[in-house]
Each structure stands twice: as structure tokens, then as C-alpha cells.
Length: 491
Image (cartoon, rainbow, N blue to C red; front, side, top):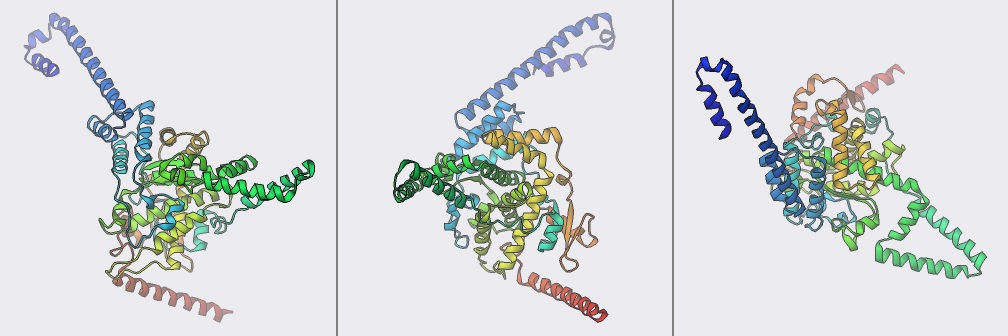
């Protein structure tokens, strides 16, 4: 009201007075009043920030979110970190949404039966806070690849040869292999027991039996945490792979707009975190994220969309992609592959002409997800590296997110945030990768970028769409056979 009265006073001043020497003297109170108003605004802003921090410290995440949306606060680093501390505390004891956790508990998930706990209030509060942070421009990388803004658009048919062409990685490097870590650790332990038996005279059989007993207790009481610690000490590379693997999951989930609620890199950390099972954990390392859309769809609140399936596929394959990019081969990730297989194979149709995912379709979806994950990690390398550094330093959730956003602030968003790197096209024997927009794919690009690519009623082709696809496939195969016949005639 003080500012409004000032404006009315100035506009009602006669022109002769406004341009007189006396008028220039009267401007001093105006500047003083403006200074008072600016100071009052700063005081009000500081009071709002203090109230925001107090709400977070009191664990009132929803109230803090409402205040952030109402006042549009630009957060300082301390407040930013406090937001994610509150998120971690709020979600630790919340009812778990198992589909969004890559843990051994996924073995019990029956995606076809839709037997899931309801979306927890804690996770909805977390989701609202992430959305508020995005809306108030406090985060920029979160959801940057969401809504179908993928680095590779076009068809989702990815052959092994095309995957290698797009990523520059071999299929072998993206295929998890059984690790020899346990075998090597066991051999080293056996050698140590032999030396100990010779030097002390203790019976070797007794040492072996005693070691097995200790191993049993270790697994029973602390999920093998002691043995894992010994392995990490003897094999530092093992720890690096775990960090970069989990950073891949964390970062891709964040880019795709799925709120991340926590990340653990050891069994000891999982034992102390209820989100990963606590004392009953079977987790050695993991990232917990939440996809509200997928949760609603799996719980039957709305039809399952291909967009949700695609997001999940990319996030699951991101750990394997990260290992392949950083080490040339993925030693871990067999559990991730199995999680994706279980997820897709249990998407049982309820009708509408939808069909189940077969083995070939699942493998193709895994390749497509791996391609997208590799390209995202490569194009956002500065952000990914900043996240890895934060995790290696033992950073909490807030420090990890701050590292990502700070890298964006310093380097800006890559060009794929605005346009894709290329397009996958069904041409030739193995498909083609084009950097220019294919003429026949302009409409398809708009459909994919909308992020609501619903296929049938369950995210899988309907009968009519399958007939069209089969006819197109038949024509392509006929052309390929004609080409082969002509080549054979030339020979």
C-alpha cells in the first residue's frame, strides 16, 4: 500500500512543480522510501527462507513444498541440501513401492497380478517437492530427458549390429558376465589359511571349517557385509565398478524425471537404511527411485503406456551401460537384466487384442534401453562424472543432486535436451542410424517426443496394429529375399 500511495502522489503533482528545483529536492524522500521498501522485501524474503528451512528441519515436507510453490524461493546451497535431507528422512520409513527398487525383493514381484501396496503419501510428497523444484527453476537436469526427449528417436527395433553402430560398443561389452570376484577372494582366503596352518601348526581342516562357520554367521547376521568389506580392501576396482554402476541408474532416473530417494553402495549402508530392507536386507548396493506414472499404471489406476515401459527399461539398463562405457565390459548387471525380463514377461494382457512380450521382444527392448542409456550418459558426461565424484566422497542424496545441477550450471544442457542425436530407421537388413530427420519419420518424431506413446491398451500392439506391422514385415522380407536372389544370380 505504501508503494501504491507513492505512485498516486507523484502522478497528481502539477507539471510546474515537478520540474522545479523544489521538486528535485522532494525526490530524496522518494529514494529513501524505495530503499526502505527494498530492505523490507529482503527482510520478507529472508523470513520466508527461514520458515522454509524450519519446516524442512521439522520433517514437514508437504508444508515446505506448498511454501516453495507459493513463494517461488530461489534456494541457496544450504537450503537445497536440507530439502533432500528431508526427502531421505521422509521416505526411509515409508511403505515401499517395490517396482521402482532394483533389489532382490523383485524376485517376488508378480507384475501380471497387480499386487502392490498403494502409492505411499511419503513418496507423493517427495514427487511434489521434486516437481516444485523444477517449476521454480531450482533444478534443470531433473526431467531433462523426460516426456520422450530421448537421444535416439524413430523405431524401437534395434538389432545387435545397429546397437554397435550407434553406441560404438560391442554387444559383448553390454552383456553382463559372471564375475570371478568370489572365486578369487576364496582362493586368496584358502591360501592364507594354508600359510597360517603351516606357521602355527593348526590343523588345516579345522581352519577351513571355522572359516565356513564364520562365513555362515556373516551371511546370516549382516548379509555378508564382513566378507564384502574384505573383498573391497583386497580389490579396490570392485568398489569403483559399484559406484559407476549405481551412478548410471541414479543419473538416468533423475534425467527421466523419476525422483531418486536414496542410493547405497555397500551392504553396511543397506543394513542401516529401511528403504533397502534394513536388517533384513539382501542388497549389496542399489538405487531407489520412484515413477509415479508407472506406479499408477501397475496398480490399475490407468492403462499401462509404452512411455512408462521405456523409462523403466532405460533406467534398468543404465548400470550396465555405465560399466561398459567406463570399463569396456559389464561385470555386474545380471540382476538388472533379470529384473527387466521379469517386468516385461509378466505384463499379461487384460484384453483389447494385446499380446504378451516374447523372448525376442524382450531382448530388443533391452537393446533399445541400453542404446538410450549409453547416449544419455555420454552426452551428459560432465553431470555423470560430477555425480560419481560425489558418490565416491560419500555424498548424501542432496550433495549428489547438487553436484549434477552445479555441472549443468557450469556447462549448460547438451544439445540433446532440444533435439535428438539421430533416428533409428527400419531400412536394410539390420536397420539404419540417421542423423538427419527421415522424411517418413517427421510425424513419428512428434509422436515419440510427446511422451504419451500408448500402444494398444497395455503398451503392446493391438490386433489391427499387429496386422499392419506383419504386412510391412512381410514386404520387407520379400524385398530382402529378392535382393539375396539377385546377388546369388550374379555369383
